[in-house]
Amino acid sequence: MWLWLALAGSVLQFIALGSNFYVVNEQVRDAWFGIPHASDLILLSAVVAIGAFALTALGRSPIGGRGVGLAVGIVGLLATLQLGYRMIIPPFGCLMYGCGPSDAANVTLLPGIWIGLAGCAMVLVGGLVHAFSSTARNTSATSWATENQGGMTPWLGLAALGAVAQFIFGYTFFTFYTVTGFVGQKGPTGWGGWIATPHTSSLILAITLIIVGVVVAAGRGRSPLAPAALGGLIAVLGFASGARILYRIVDPPFTTAGGSTDTAVGSVTIHTSAYLAVAAAVVIIAVGIVQATTQRKESQESSANHA
Image (cartoon, rainbow, N blue to C red; front, side):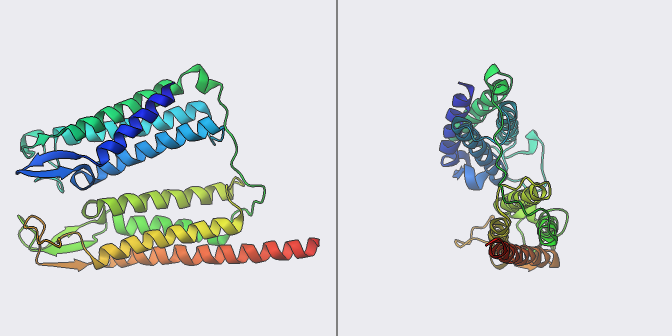
């Protein structure tokens, strides 16, 4: 029953993501572009809730019932707190550097943001109550490990290093852009990728965690995919992250097609760290392809020997 509540909350979260959240300076702002990191977290919460419900219903959850409930509830809690924060301090006029409630822009909260908050709260309550229910205690995990395990290889280790490197270089303390002429700023301003390209940074973080996770699982002999398929997955993920990072190098987020005055700048300089992030993604693609090719060849040779 409580996972049903979380599922209903996830539906409200999706409705909210397609809704308008604010009216600021007589302009309507939606969830996706108005509060990008928060909207990414709401999306993650909805996906986790739906995935947990589906896997539990099918009896294919890789973690036990309590772990399912805690995962749904904790991500729902983070989404609730982030959305509540953005209701108190809307991200207009102080998004990049932060500010207190007294410095935040004067906005009107639209029904969409309240729908989002209700959905997040439902996911939070449904997940946590399920975690401590008798149903969760009696729901065991189902292993996803494939019978054909290849174990850790040097290529998988390089893939994990590349995944971590692409996130560190592009979306931590390194400078991604230097912008001159940004409205309200005097002189050149340095920007990291995390704040300047929020949707991209969330995607790269997710891809990094997935690659590191599957590499760790393979090293423990618990890979959900056969060795060749695992290499193919890593190559695809590397291509997705590399393409997105490269897109934000070619098209920086400081100008708009319509020449909006609140985002128009004089010039943008791309820093070396951005290109290092792309290079790390290229490494992921290359080692994923090598992993898939070598493991497929070894599998074919092993089959031939047995024949």
